[in-house]
Image (tube, rainbow, N blue to C red; front, side):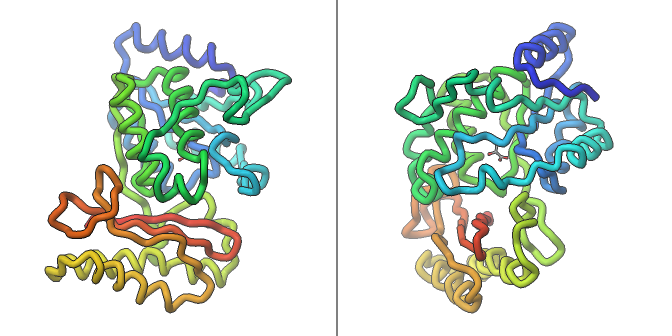
Length: 288
Ligand code: PAF
């Protein structure tokens, strides 16, 4: 397994592989790897000749006062896991190589070109975390241009991010296949996230309410309920029982546009939820 920090070296290696006819898969991550990431890597390993995993905690997708500085960076542990999974290359650039030398100006009004995520980047997570989806769209564009994969793998846990990236790749004609992968959960249902390690034992127990609320909506739908208001009320009934959890949004949306639905007749639907559990912000979603 190679470790590359330099974008040119990464691109040259990938171009060589491509010229030999090898299929390249990319799994973009911010490190602090868990079973959810490993499931993406296994998918990539099974379908591609070469697997690149990027580890880059991207500053432009964190807002002021968010956890960029404190985001977990267990690089040695991550490398050991990636070696075990048969990853071919870890691409781990520095902030300076990705965003410029000494005069680092990451403000949206500065010298840099950003990729806007459009309307899909303004709602839900975009509203709660202004600039977040622009940061994601920008860094994913950079990573795809550097690693030049045929396929890139993203988890459905970050459902809105996945939809933004699918649209980005389609709208800007990247010619790369985006492979969505199911959310991996702890035995008690909590969606795996690098931020779960920040939860105290009490918060960790309380955090399962996100998945329980989503399941309440999915079960109701399964029983034939078609009123969106009733599904949203069912979610609220569950999360209101948990005082340690402050829900920011819980909604039933169109699975493609993420527009709030009035009725389940309006196409494939998804229930989405975001909440603060103590200082930690968590998101989750479920197919309805
Ligand atoms: O999901 C993540 O870990 C990040 O948002 C991503 C896609 C690696 C971009 O920084």
